[in-house]
Length: 517
Figure 1: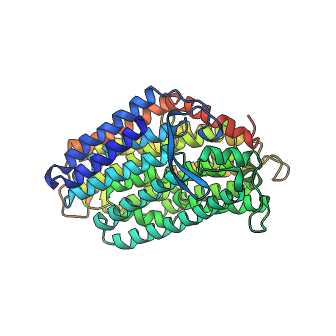
Figure 2: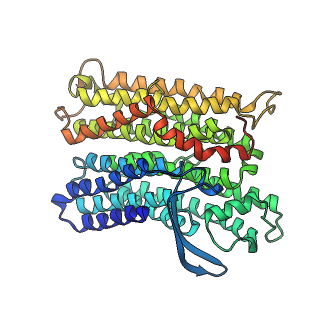
Figure 3: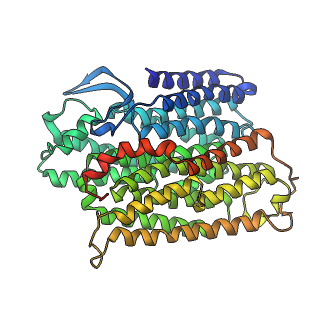
């Protein structure tokens, strides 16, 4: 019952903070958020799962019991963790207290409501990464949207209402598409399943039990459902061209919300793509691997070029997330151990690095009251620790060796170059290797815009086009930055902390579509 305890503690903490006086809400939220963080680390140390949750693997901390019957389907409470979900659960639980700590300075109104919603969002995210019955999973999936909408809409910038509504419309339409695609598969399976249990449905689909639905044959039904879910989850990733909600949401959201949005929430999309599209329908993923790889490369290059054109530090980091998540899609479509394992590792690595970058931008903004590159120069002399961590995080984004981003991208590139999914598709060559070669130019562009931004804002003679005095940031602003950079380096030096359990979980799935060794 440890997963239930984790969810219950986080939910009760959210209500407790929501009812607490504003003056103690931040500190109370931070202390209470340490409980799920400690719990998740203990769960990691005691993890004894093996294999993939949807492909008959042994789950850790699994609990299942009957809940209600809905028509011919039993809706069960089913939770558990495998090597894919465990790292993401730890990422969520560890990143949340750091985001809460980073909120102490910028959030000065209605603190109890803000921190209560942050903990409620954490509970929902933990549910997404641990639920294995579709009905339960979908409830948690939708619950994440509610606190995010209010956190942007109430505590955001001048255009917060526009950004919040745009975020809500995009993600809700995406959820509807995903829901239609998945339910079409459930109805197509007919009497062969009696529950919405995700492992049962995955097994039935991979056993070829899908029939026709409404005159649509099984093959066409699979393809239609695949693309409905791909677009639905792709909006959350986000992939180009469904990415336009992300920069607005990031720019208007307060810093702690951006940390959770980029650090964890975007991973919901890639996690769901891995669980639903690539595990339940591997044959369709292989059939359309060319299109998926093309989408991944376009997201990498286009996102990087958009970042290069920005003058707002937060927009630069936001668009760079679009580019980084494109590498995750590229790793998934490789369909081998290194590719899919690297994609999953990149979810964790990007969660830490993007959280670090947004946090550093937030500290700079709290001190200077501007995020515009043209307004600042020479900040390194005024706030050396913050700048040092910002530079280290930027190097992590560039994929510097001994950092988590390098390990993730290395695994992805090795997997993509050795993949046989697109063997002989482009002039008789390995098409995915060509796509990967093109995507690697994204690293050059990333290095270009980050070095340009750092050179303009951090170094040279001090200059600030505002009336604010610049001093060193407070301890509670800098401490989360230091913790995150240490974690980024730790995963870069010792990637096997998570990678061994990830490989174990993706191995069987990677072989389903024959992507090579």
